[in-house]
Length: 95
Image (cartoon, rainbow, N blue to C red):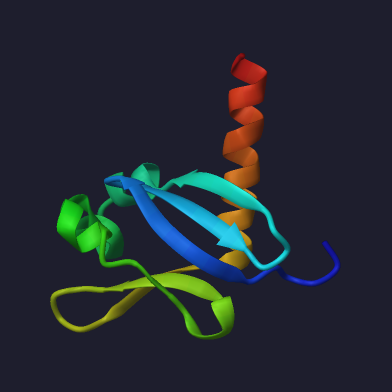
């Protein structure tokens, strides 16, 4: 990819897992549960209704949530794509 693909949509599949669509047509399932399990800023996403409140950032640069204190917690489009690709490769390898 010469240009960073932007997120078009992010839809919860199950709690902690998103289906993400990028503007280049790529679609993938991204398991965010390892990030949530680490706690800290993402810990509040362990709640299904909070995780379901995912939004796409301005110009598709990220996906984000707003925590109880009003702070924005986000995952960048490039990082999501890299995570999606890595997780897909692991699944292919394991099959």
